[in-house]
Length: 384
Image (cartoon, rainbow, N blue to C red; front, side, top):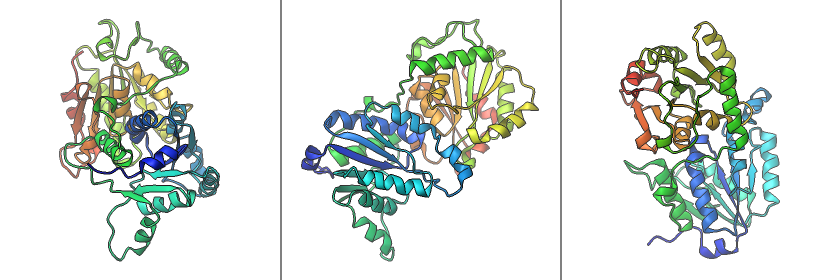
């Protein structure tokens, strides 16, 4: 039996814990299960989360989008998260956040950051000079003195790659981290994505569909897959997400237009309404592109006000098509069938609900998502 990295007496005495991570929406989709399990295993410890913005910049023009990152809304709404640090997108705010965290005098800090782990080892110790500090540690050459010095600041270290092996899903990997750290197991049944959509945003989604002329006759009344059936007379609603954080994982807008046309050529999908998700910073460019296409029953969408706008709209759909980003995981969370467009690399990030997910991969290992063709997607398209 492997001894847990955080000693039981440290956990027994701690009244709060700070987790440091460079989270994306997809990460949190699965990590939140581990945080919830931690809160159940150690109810006396308040969970604080530091979300470090790896795109931190001195450029004020970038802050308008970084400070409205949708993940912040989701984490802040979680009942098992007591405090959130979300102002790390500019160097001055980053330093201000460090000072704020230092005042908390954390007895326990855990860095889950796998990118630049030496940097986060140092950050964790800077925040908690006297506390028990754990961080990720990757192998480093003997000449990487700065890395070894940073790792020496940790009281315990976890190799993030030790649990990785072919066939494991990312949720399994995260669960293994928490078992190694704290000694508890997040059961497979508790690793499925979930999202609790406030009534306000459920109402918003239904009203938005009415304004677009996409209102459903009966609507989705349950998140259970077997109850998501719509009437035969009702037109379908398909959500397409071609955007990811990096351009190499995005799908060309030209292909979105081709796919919309191809969908409507299929029996039972002729009158399909299509919603295309657009990241806020690309909305102007997307409008310019699609304004020239003259597609009917077609709308661009962006969750610019609150994160929960996104899952609320997704929940109303009959099918979701998404590149490898958070939307394909949220599809599982709202129990809507999804076609996920992925590279061959990183299969551990495939949607976890296999019964309601179809994965279409690029044909060659070196290919990016943009290499996936419309014909590949239509070939796996469900019957009406």
